[in-house]
Image 1 (tube, helix red, strand yellow):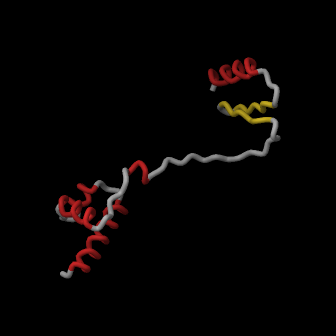
Image 2: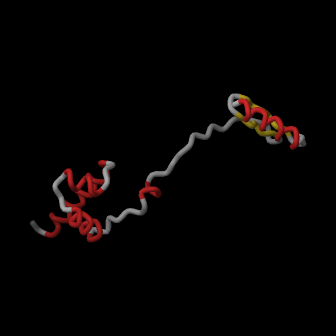
Image 3: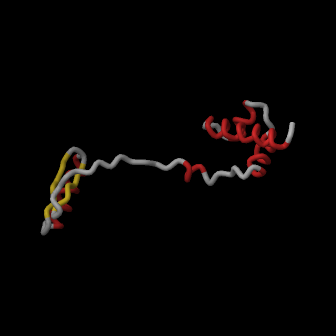
Length: 103
């Protein structure tokens, strides 16, 4: 096998391993490929990845709601509180704590 063919073969193997969701060790065992050989080709082909954590971000859903520019909506459990400019901070704190205790 020529070097170009080997590189193409190993690019495909690395692609399949990464798409599998398995660890490299488990994938190699399942495909009867030497773990060290896989690591060698990943380095040789410059296919190293950054940490798995960087590759799989955790996303949360954010749903914007229409409110006036001078107020915000605070949700605690199922309750919603609209807080307008000039609100009483101490009162809001008490209300949120009370709702949190009952959520």
